[in-house]
Every structure is written in C-alpha cells, then in structure tokens.
Length: 109
Image 1 (cartoon, helix red, strand yellow):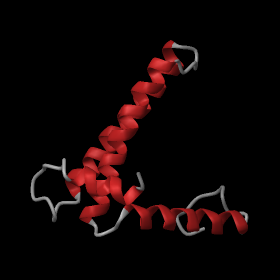
Image 2 (spheres, one colour; image 1 turned 90 degrees about the vertical axis):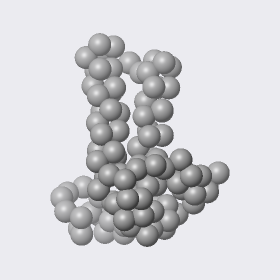
Image 3 (tube, one colour; image 1 turned 180 degrees about the horizontal axis):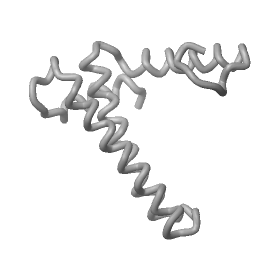
Image 4 (cartoon, helix red, strand yellow; image 1 turned 180 degrees about the vertical axis):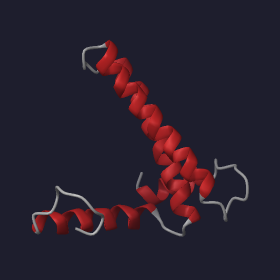
C-alpha cells in the first residue's frame, strides 16, 4: 500500500465534526495519539529497564497507526496528499544533510 492509498482508505473511516473544514480536530487527535506513543515508551524506561519486548512493540505499532491516521486526516483537511508531504520532508532533510544542518534549531535551517 502506498501513502495515498492509505490516505484514501483512512478517509473512509473518518467521522468528526465539520469534516472538510476542520483541521483542529485531527490536530488535537494527532497530539493525543503521539502522547500515547510517548507514554508507552516512557513506561518501557520506567518498568522494563528500556527493553522493548514484542508485546510492547505491538502496542506501540497500534498507536503509531493512530498517529498515521490523524496525519492523513490533517493532510486531507489542508489539501495535501501524504505522498507530497513525505516527499517534501525527504527533500527538506536531504537539503539539510547536504548543508550540514541536520542538527540545530529552526524549521528553515
């Protein structure tokens, strides 16, 4: 499955207020789901001495899927397809790498 296929299929499961004109809802969902990923990783550090067992990895995989779903919805709300979002990100990172600017601060380094 490519990213745009995923985005189209994910949209079929979307149901939230004012779909098509509401980037706020998927933004809030994205931050919530990203927090759930972080919380699971935190608990690996706290409870499992940093060891990611298969069960934990699978639980994180499910949360990452939720993150991806909200990224797809926010992208749709803003008129982007996931393929173009991914390509733009790789172009940005490649440019930074070539200029020795991977580390540091700021979006436009």
